[in-house]
Amino acid sequence: MKQQLKYSILGLAAVVAINVLASYVYHRFDLTEDKRYTLSEAALQTVANFKSPIVVDVLLEGNLPAEFSRLKTETILLLEQFRAENRKITFNLIDPKEGIDNPEEFMAQMQQLGLKPVNVTLSEDGKTSQEIIFPWAMVNSGNQTVKVPLLKNKLGATPEERINNSVQQLEYAFADAFTKIGIKDKKKIAVLKGNGELEDQYMADFLTSIRDYYNIGAITLDSVAANPNRVLDQLKTFDLALVAKPTQAFTEEEKYVLDQYIVQGGKSLWLVDQVAMEIDSLYNENGSNIALKRELNLDDFFFKYGIRVNPVLVNDLYNTPIVLATGSSTDSQYNPLPWVYNPMVFSRENHPINKNIEAVRFQFANGIDILNTGARKTVLLASSPLSKTEGSPKTISLDILAQTPNEKQYEQNAGTPLAVLIEGEFNSAYTNRVKPVKLTNAAEKGARNKMIVIADGDLIKNQLRNGLPLELGYDKWTNSFYGNKEFLTNCVNYLLDDTGLINIRNKKVAIPLLDPQKISEQKSKWQLINILLPILLVVLLGISYGWYRKQNYKA
Image (cartoon, rainbow, N blue to C red; front, side, top):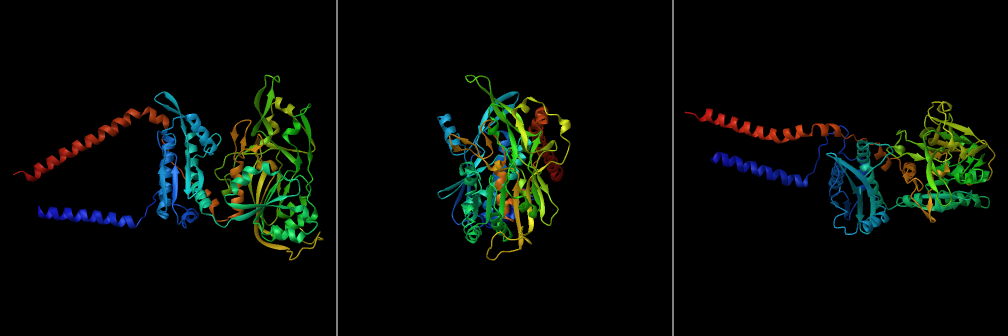
């Protein structure tokens, strides 16, 4: 008896000692094949230097469907990993609908905060119900709050795929939010003006979104003629130049200043239209207009860097609709109709920039030719295999909406490149040429650099409602969302941060999901197994133990 008591006390002491030690030393063994529960080094760096409390409010509490319960579990596990890295991080689970007396007023408040709900249809035991979920988290530090979307939708995705996409982007989403909270020294982006670029109101949503990461300023190139060295010096104080849909030709002096900025290390993001055509120009009595080549004087400039933006229009059977009014002026009906000149482009998933993004909407896009030069090119987005290009000038008419496209005219192909990343050592486009202007410390060859060229200026353009900008990628006529903002944000992040957040997007997470049909068919069987099997095991264990005692202690 004393021996048993001694062992019991020693065992209890060992358990207490292990628990005390575990409170000071934390380690998790990740035995999953995809290392789902191991944070990347880039993600760990985002929380390493927090000195003040960070509170994360997760709005996934209450009555949740099975798929959102799984998302909630994965979110908690991820936040526990961040907390293990930095104890300043805490998190709460909140039911945003708890104690709400006026649902309509509450919904309006949440919408104003940018927390869009998800209406989920639940089917269980033949009964169907609707549930409103807010799949968001709020990262709070002092007076600063950053919203984190927990749900990742993709067009045509099944519920299982939606959960996989959502879980896969969780680490990136939270690391992105922690970066915004902790960033102190922001890099600078120059929005180029002076060549008929998009007005600020049409870029407002995108520029507002990236303002959390970067400082943004404007530079006007038309002053190059008066003082090119001063303009170049100003431009070199920025880390990236954004050129959004220029409509007026660049002079040789302006091109040379931009060339020297790029050769001397400046990153650049170009969104150009080589064909002048807008959907609004078709809303006339004839319902047609002529698409003409837009002369930007950039052909030789891009040629030196290894691409050619062609003055053609991409006609794609995979497209996004436009909305036209039919009927009388007093009884109009608005119908979405497929528009072959608005390609809907699905990512190739071949680069961190285009990983796990929604389909991107192009409008009157041009095609890009890849030239065989030293710099490495990566096609980030391309039209579908059922697409073709049409030269300019060309008459574009709304009459094609009444015609059924002939698939035989669309030869199967690899798709036309629409967005290209160029990386390598950039040489000056003016090497062995007469320089249009004299610049101080001009360079013929540069170190490694990168730029992105997108053959559609409207990719960055947000719509307006009552003169106010809407979210980039949102189409107010069809109430659809596209991945334009996410794609462009990834472009800027990659250009300005080689080894940072953008690389987290490469992480692949595969979650084994249950088959709903098998669950329905075998529900009763597994309920019986889960209830009866433990009871039978306990009974058998009791009988076996009784038999053992009888055999061991019988006279």
